[in-house]
Image (cartoon, rainbow, N blue to C red; front, side, top):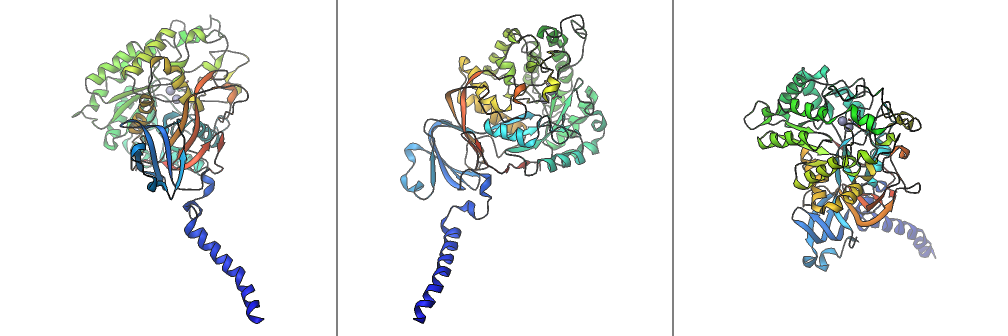
Length: 506
Ligand SMILES: NC(=O)N[C@H]1NC(=O)NC1=O
Ligand SMILES: [Zn+2]
Ligand SMILES: [Zn+2]
């Protein structure tokens, strides 16, 4: 009698011990240490299979093994033995493309200080939904601007536990710090991935423009750190019309005339007068100049090609909106399309695509630069007064693909423009490729799947109404996004916790 009683008392205890042993030894590892809310997948060791994996050695059919956020093996379908996959989870995506996640080196998340414009949570959710696994935040449009270690610290604080993808930061090169090498060094020591400056007014009071002397001095400091300077290359010159006041401000052509190609050409000519210092043996060897959002595909691009030919360390990006839209198509008063430099005519767009296909333009970025709808003046439609900036973050992959298809864009080119080159520019060497040892930042997408960006389509950035892509039909649907092995987005749903990591330069 007493013995049975003892057995009955012991039984629950034994069950509890067995349950604990199961949790520690048999269940997926993410239950032990990782916060499973970071991922929609309760495993941190698994395989992903796809018929189209974009690797540095071409597109293969096979499987990628991810463990602890790292790509630990990559096996072609023919070499993949059943024994290898017997013990861990396999996610088979079939014909969907598996690619490195996109790295967007040019986004304005406006946090802290103007989070009513965007903010880290909404901006990084939009990124995850668009297959972007890392973005580098611009130093302006937040308040304060990122121009010192103290202001970088505010960014880092604001981003903590609020980012759904990885985020790095560019610091600002402004007249206040440009001629003070110790100020610049302290900003670089604090972890910015490089610097950014404007050659014309930026539209933000606490981010003044630099002149060529500021830029030259900045480059000599950057050389020691081997980090880049990103430049908004437009310079104010006489334009066909001064402020457009005699022209209809609701006409896109009026705005276009206020920022002619000579603004880009003039800035680039001026900028390239100092980039010879970045050549091997030059006084700023190790520094690099990256021209952001090129719009003019004529003389400006010719100058860049010439400088590259001479050995200057120079690269250039353009943005999907310059490749998708043309001035002729922009409706009267539709300020969603206002950005600087402006979207030019269809012949220029054609030349931009030619340059992409030839490799004369190195990479793409979103230049996602939102604001609150009131400042877009959508009801007024005044192009001269509205905020300049395009909201696009979530759609850059399908836009690149949809508009690039007619030029024969390949999956490898998409990876080069959106992952490989950007990873090198930002010094993120553990990212940007599906290769053993790299971080498991991945996107799975269906290039053939079409969708409409209508009212029903979930848009995650803060102000969908100002997006220039509303109403467009695109092809290329993002199915899943993995950030350091965490499945952060799947079929319209995000993981609940924001577990992206900060990318600070060491
Ligand atoms: N301040 C700011 O974001 N400006 C950006 N907007 C835009 O259209 N071009 C830019 O440089
Ligand atoms: Zn700019
Ligand atoms: Zn920008």
